[in-house]
Length: 248
Ligand code: PEP
Image (cartoon, helix red, strand yellow):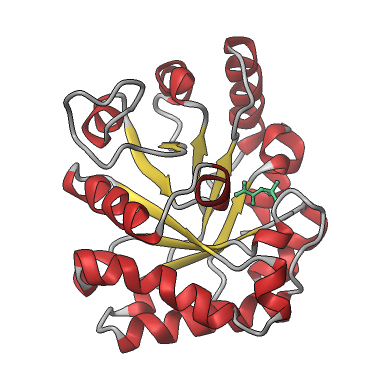
């Protein structure tokens, strides 16, 4: 039995004022305990502030990225042990914006994944194809390559403890959502691919991400291999985020 999960990725948005107002609104609107686990991933500089606001609420904290090294001369970086130290449970690795805008390779993403596990935290590994790749019919090959790079480095047992988010690049921040059937097909493929690699994939949580909104969340989350969502834009407003959390 996989516990559903909804993670809010704030990206490069926020302020101290927003942390207290938005998290305050989310927590007061939560009401009865939800079946889904809820994680909030603010920018690094607001993690400490968010930790204070979430204290005792059951809503957990995540980071949006991490360095593949634990310590040393890496100016500007933030390590997995540091993220653990400020109370993170989850760390997103391989988000498509990191892969495309910051040229992160499959190998670097795999090393970041390993660093997160080394620190005792849980990676949320993002995979997904671009529109050109989907149109060229290579969605499965792209997702397989992204998954295999991690399995090769860390082994099947470790990836079985992580969360995988399928985020088609063409659906992120564009308002174009994958249909429930399109998303389910890739989720089923991911589970099958992990199984083939020796991962006990039945217990791995697979999230969908890409323009999830209250209007499409119920249908998406009802699919058998979709265990919740990684939410960008819609996590920046308490009402929309809460509606998505309730759908999971
Ligand atoms: C994301 O940033 O992971 C994401 C899915 O963004 P959005 O929900 O805005 O498409």
